[in-house]
Amino acid sequence: MREPFPSRLVRFACAFIIVFGISVFYRRVLPVNPTTVALTFLLAILAVSTVWGIAVSVFMSIVAMLAFNYYFLPPIGTLTIADPQNWVALFAFLVVSVLASSLSTRARQKAEDASDRRREIEKLYAFSQGLLESGNVIQLLNRIPAQIVNTFEVGAAALLLADKQKIYRSGPVIPRLDLDSLKAIVAREEPVIDVPNSLCFTPVRLGVRPIGSLGISGTILSRQTLEAMGTLIAVAMERARAIEQLGQTEAAREGERLRTALTDSVTHNLRTPLTSIKASVTNLLSNPGLSDAQKRELLTIINEESDRLNRLVGEAGEMARLDAGEVELKLESHPIEDVINAALRQCKTTLGSRAVSVVVPEGLPPVRVDLGLMKEALAHLIENANQYSPAEDPVTITAELSGDFLVTSVADRGAGIDDLEQSLIFEKFYRGKDQRFLVQGTGMGLPISKAIVAAHGGGMSLTSQRGHGSVFSFSLPVDRSRAAAAG
Image 1 (cartoon, one colour):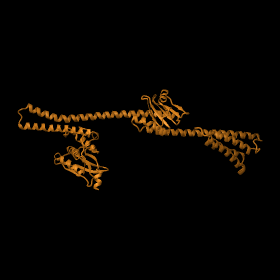
Image 2 (cartoon, one colour):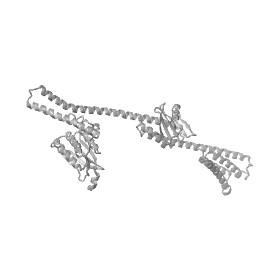
Image 3 (tube, one colour):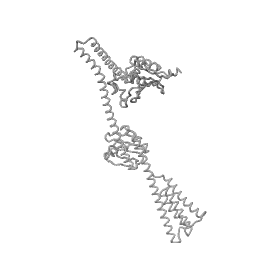
Image 4 (cartoon, one colour):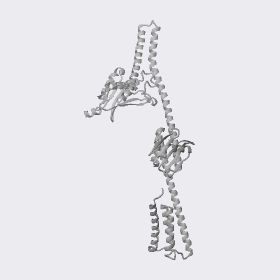
């Protein structure tokens, strides 16, 4: 940017004053020989050229030569030179001062260029780091122009994708950063720098193939920086696409694994009672000579397996209603002890002689729940712990306050659940691969419990370790209004 004329005039005036001050000092205050004066002038000229550039230092060199001639070379007080040798000295002084000024200015310019290049490299590094934070292509494309504006301190930025013919912008809309200008850069395949209009363009190339273009307004960047930006953007876009494809592939693989597991579980849960019923009926029809005790045993099997099949269908229907949000909650404020006691009464027959330890501190705030549904959710957890624990080991139920939620846990001392199955255990119809043929069940208890807790605004979690048992926990929002009233 060209410096304003008044500022340049001030610098020339300061250079003149410096020469005049040196001349007066050595003439009136400290008389010295001409060599000392010449060296002092050279030092001053070098300093000025380093700070203010070649133009001011050349002007100062000429003024210093005239002052050196007038004040320090005989005859003093005139611009003539008596000794011809002094002409050589004067000419040498002028040449040395101009050359020194030129070299000093060139060194300063190189230092400034190196500093500018270092700053651009630092900005490119920050820009590349920012590109790595986005793993989604659309999010990345919307973020790139804003990141360019913030990182490189430009006025506006526009990014064109050639295949979509869509522009992503940040900053004010600049007429020259339009679709036609950006498309022309894609076709040209090389950077364009428009200094008068403060515009920069560069193609975005993946390898040798242009996939878009970038336009910047307000600041002129070097050609090398523009090319590096185009390459970084292309690499970041390709990386984001690869991450998305990898995620989709992994999601498809996980989905297929889940579908296989669910299909296997559903098939087993439906086929087992149907197989028993079919075998019993076939035995009754093909063996009319069966004794009454044998007939009663087969009819008992049919009755139990029918109940099991009916329970499976009923739980599936309940799960469907919960998923569809068709269950209306009758919320009332209850202490968590009410939910625990109601669930234990429902599970009394199932638990039999198993020991159950209940640890609930006094003074816990109440929760707003549908007592019937929450009793059922907790009962499923208790029945699950009972089924998968050795008969002699107790089941432990605890409750504790955690922030604005009351956390209730059911712990068993069973075989535990491995990390792979922990992500599937709350899926419908899923049952542990090591237990599905040993323990009867529908695989619906845990999903139902989780859906009921979610309907109350809570969440469910699992902590398990192979060989040490499992802890199923659910959190419910505390009824702060009743807690405050009680306080």
